[in-house]
Length: 315
Ligand SMILES: C[S@@+](CC[C@H](N)C(=O)[O-])C[C@H]1O[C@@H](n2cnc3c(N)ncnc32)[C@H](O)[C@@H]1O
Image (tube, helix red, strand yellow):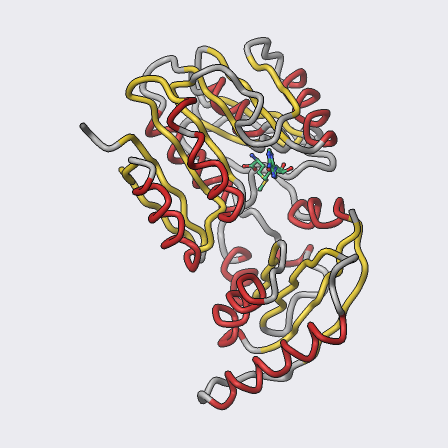
């Protein structure tokens, strides 16, 4: 599928309002935000940093928001006009817009998937887990720290993205015994592999994308694990089994489709971990969960991303 990428360079003061507008009113399929201040903060971390400042090409002047639209149905001129009008409206509220420029380009879907993966180094994520690119050496900080070896290829999931890390954190909390785990939207397979390394008894990873299924299988083999299956599937359709833990790091609108099918795929006392939720989209997810008899046991936020640990409401 071809995508139209619309890049808006402006002041960081517009980030929330403009992201919300492009996602909710212009129907962007995804939004990537590059903010100078984030890179500077990452660059100041010690040697476990996810991003080396010196490696960054085209460090943004302030904020770069890139929204991705379906190429076939997008009307480029109309989108630009609506974005410019919105920026003018935000200026009239007294926001500093900075120096605004808008550019567009056509990209293959894969370019979007790999956009996160440019700066990929060892991530010594926690006491229990480190994520190690296939081509790098790493000496575990603890003798029993588990290594997730990865070559994400074209699939999403290097471990560097906040949304993935929120699931890893919640999984460390939730996996208190050898559980069966379903990883919906497995991408590179990172969460399925992490679940297995954290002691899951049996894991299924699914994805709608052929590239992801291939990448996940390769990464599972790289980690010498034989208790993980990978299957192409659209959310929970065509999945018959029940699981103790279901994890899904997918954008909020797709999670909304998944919620009604959760109950029939969860064992008794089963748990669910969601990530990929922009904080502006959280109310929709909270409402849908409540309507389907689920409650939020733990809520995590990093930047604008929300991760949730969820369970059935008690009877
Ligand atoms: C944000 S990535 C998450 C990858 C990995 N699990 C992680 O946490 O880093 C979302 C993944 O969901 C997959 N996906 C999107 N829509 C889907 C659907 N309807 N059913 C299954 N997978 C889907 C995408 O192909 C992509 O690999």
